[in-house]
Image 1 (tube, rainbow, N blue to C red):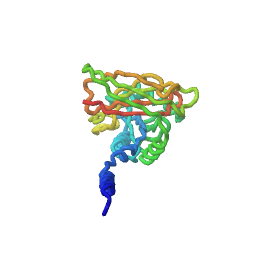
Image 2: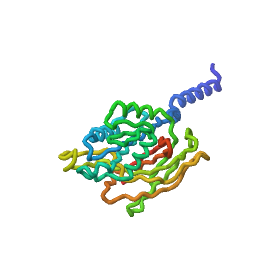
Image 3: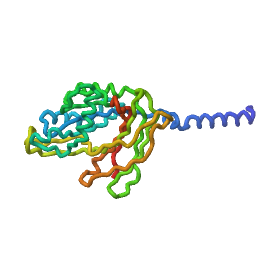
Length: 270
């Protein structure tokens, strides 16, 4: 005859075994880190007055839409220069500011001669903007490099046509000596196109990727501390910009070398 306590012990062991079988495993799955996507900034200097530019515009749009690799977050900036405007067609998206930015790249990267279409990847590599294989190779190489963590968040809109954003830049790493890390904030708009009536692209309906609408320096990141820059920024949005197509982009870029150390992009919420 079995002892009553032995029977109770068997029952307890059975209950513990059953509980072990039905114990949830959520903790195991939640501990697995999510894939971190490496931001890669691809700038295209272009013009609607340039007959060589539409293929480069189309390439940038495809690169922005088609994933190159699982860890790449491509941030597209299409910057329309103004030095084609006197040759038959005035590009409505052009700005002297983007021309000036290209000239700074020309000096830093050593090519000495601004041209269109010119593609610049992470501020470090430049080439003719319609060269697909060069673009893909440069983007994948840039994605393999360590970036400074950057956080960009949208604050409550005040309803006055001005967007409020919060910015945070992590600890500076790998920066060149005697070079400043500038913080730039840009607004881009997709879905833009033009029916060109004059110039080299007369008769064409040109479609664009993420056209830069505004860009300005909002400060400098400092080497001290885990957070090198933090603050709020207000960006005016023009009435003709379609809010559903707008994105905000933050760049951390060395002033002299022009290398982009970190970046982030978010959609402007409705």
